[in-house]
Amino acid sequence: MSNPIPLHSRHHSVLPDWLTLYYERPIELTHGEGRHVWDADGNRYLDFFGGILTTMTAHALPEVTKAVSEQAGRIIHSSTLYLNRPMVELAERVAALSGIPDARVFFTTSGTEANDTALLLATTYRRSNQILAMRNSYHGRSFSTVSITGNRGWSPTSLSPLQTYYVHGAVRTRGPFAHLGDADFTAAAVADLEDVLGQARGGVAALIAEPIQGVGGFTSPPDGLYGEFREVLDRHGILWISDEVQTGWGRTGEHFWGWQAHAQNGPPDILTFAKGIGNGMSIGGVVARSEVMNCLDSNSISTFGGSPVTMAAGVANLGYLLEHDLQGNARRVGGLLLERLRAITAGVPAVREVRGRGLMAALELTEPGTDRADPEAAAAVLEAARAGGLLLGKGGGYNTSVLRIAPPLSLTVAEAEEGAEILEQALRGLDQ
Image (tube, rainbow, N blue to C red):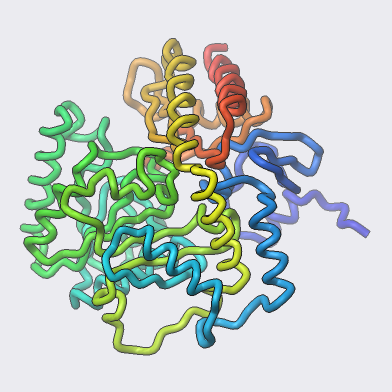
């Protein structure tokens, strides 16, 4: 017999108040297929957020579900204490794709845990607890990753095991350098980095940066900025950690990894990933050159990282992505979608900016005629889009006034057009 109490009420009675739910009337998603999902009431939605950029290829992708089912029928769990063929196979592919020489791969269960591991490696390798991070950044929910998150809306405590210094440069159209051209913007950010290093006590461990900030509202610097940072970091022996949890696996269309837009001085020392590689399965990980990865001198395992089932899903999902050139699809369809978004927002005073790359797009909403964020407008459009059959995400600093668009990378041109039409109708409601 089913429980007669509504699921929303049950959620609030047993789960934390800070566990955010979208929508005034939250929805329960029951199943999905391709780029669409259905809720418990039978409503069908075009999914433009993919479980926070996690459903990377498609919902219920047969190749992934088959791999999961077959592996679960053999053995579900063994831990990293035993040889694990799917884990080795996925690690080999990720290492080869990473661009990092002599790469080693460690699997985790989330992006938070991946970034936490990267911080452990960097601080151990450099014997320093000092970290450089970008303003407006987000790197996860653990105690250490919260302490390097430069976005107060996602940083509930100032207590930290790390000494964190925040650097300008990740947000192109806001802040003290926004009025500068790209070259001057980059030069000013590099000068700021040098100045910040002058405040540190020497021996900073690492800079961690998202090539495109995710929770921060899909903001990014000019191409090449982190490459310029790399020159400064190398002079000081400081490691570069590229947080690819949201930008990895070809989502930006132009590159397989976000760091490749800043590659003039080589790859990062450490790369973290998660979300899309599992297509909904719980996979995260760290790639680092061997001397960095092997710097730990104590025992370490992962009970659930590298699970045979999740690794089988990752192998199948990555294979599908590469065989079907979903990076190319993100470039082509994402480019068309961005053009369409710019067209439909051209006459909407509340839209301050349309930005993005590939199938990673954002609309920033402000009070018309100002630069003041308008989270109420963002919430209203999110609700109206849902009513029209489209699921979006939110983000953008501490005030969540940015609509985030990140559908599965198999999105078709017709679906991109359909989503843009629904969003256009939702935006029109702001004028009523």
